[in-house]
Length: 409
Image (cartoon, rainbow, N blue to C red; front, side, top):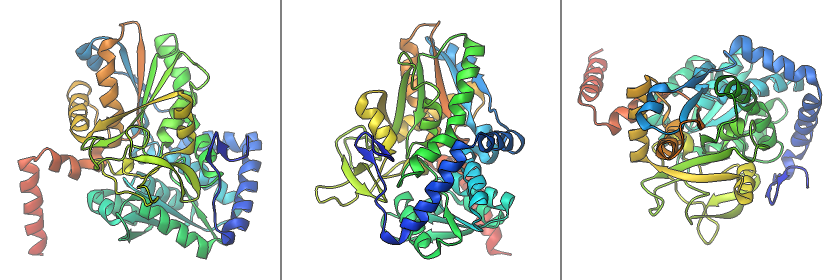
C-alpha cells in the first residue's frame, strides 16, 4: 500500500510551497516513531503531567437502569485539559522540540484542542496561535477565555460556515507563510500524511490502556466499543486497542443533528449527503454537492461539526470493521441527562453521541456481555449550549443579571 494511504483514502495533496516542510516533518516523525525512548518520554510526560492512565469506570447504576450489558466508561474527561486532545498535542509538542520550532498553530472547533495546544505551548515555551470559526467562538466562549489566558492568540474565522472546516483552512494559510519556525498541530486524524497516522499513534495510548483495564475488571474482551466521530481522533484512539479482535464490534457515532434526512447534520458515513473528494490536503468522504462544493454542517456539538472524516475511519468503514451510526441533537441531550442522573458524570456533547448508541443497544444484550463507551471529554465546556438547549430559566436570569452588572461597571 502506498505510504500515507488507507485503502483508497488519505494521501498528501499539498501545495508546492509546503513540500520542504512536509519532508522535514516526515523525517522527524519517522525518527521519533523508530526511537523507543521517544515513546517512553511521551508516556512519562502523560503520566506526570496529564493524569494517565485515565480510569475505566464501571457504570453500575446505568447498567442496572438499562438492563443487559455491563457498561464501562473510559474517562478521557479526567485527562489534563478535560479531553483526549491532550494526548496528541503533548506528543506533537515533544516532536516540535525535536524539530527546533518556536511557534505552534492549531485549529479548533469545540475548543478542547485549542485549550490543549495553548497548554502545551505554555508548558514548552512556544508562541501559539489558534484559529476558530466565529460560530464556535460564540458557543465555546469559556474555552476561548482559557486559551487567551494561557497565552495563545485566538483568531476568529469569519469565512464560509465559520466552523471547524474554515478554521483548518486559515491554519494552513498561516503555515504557508510561517513554515520556517512554525509547526501546525493538527487536532484530529485528518489532513495530509503524516497527520492521520501520527495523531492516531499518539491517541493509541487510550486503546493500550483500556485493553488492559477491561481484562482486569471484566476478565475478557468487551463485546462492543462506542466512540463519537467528528474527525475521529478519540475513536481511533480507543479502537486501536481492539482492531485485531474481530469479535469486538467497533461503533462510531456521528452527528445526526436535526436528522440525517435533513440538511442539518454532519454525518459522512451514514446517509447519502457525502461523497469521495479531495480537500484540505487529503482524500476522504466529504459532505459536498454534485459540483464538489462543501456543504454546510450542523451539530449541537462543535467538535463534531466537520465536513470530512478521517481517511483511516473511511477505510475501516468501507471494510466493515467499524459500524457507523448517527445520533440527533435531541437524543444527545436525553443521553446526557441520563448519564448525569444515574452516574453523576457530565459527558461533553460530543461524547454524549457515543452514549446515545450505547444506551439504545445495551438493553438488547446479555448481562455477561460488556460494552465500553469512550467519554472523550467533559461537559463543563458546553454549559452555555446545554443551558440554552434545556431553556433553563435560572441560567437565563443569571446571564441577564450578569450582563446588566457589566453594563453598570
